[in-house]
Length: 118
Image (cartoon, rainbow, N blue to C red; front, side, top):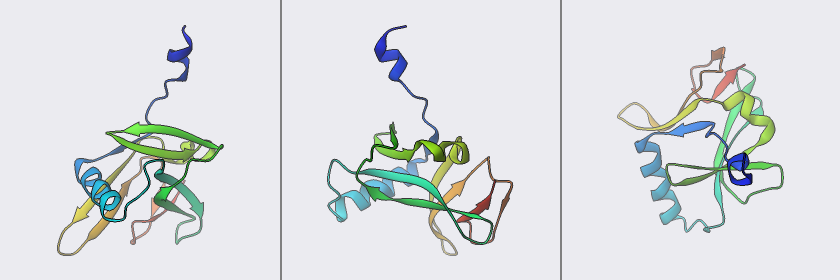
């Protein structure tokens, strides 16, 4: 196997077209530096045990870096087990506006939609 093929990593998450549109709007409106990426992760807390981390940040040594539908995504290696297969969407309805996380690894979620148990 050649060295290039060994460095190719499967994208752990997916971004819907609505999420990509909103992320590109945020990048443009807030002048996010080109070297930054979308940090996707988890942290302890929230009603169900974990909550999601989503925001723009500089890459760190502990990150894996992916390009998902043209968006640079940063993820700490240890967070992949909680996020593998997750879809991030952006809802823009009358009752709900914001990013939504559809995580197949969550064994329980709460009503806020930003907290989960694994």
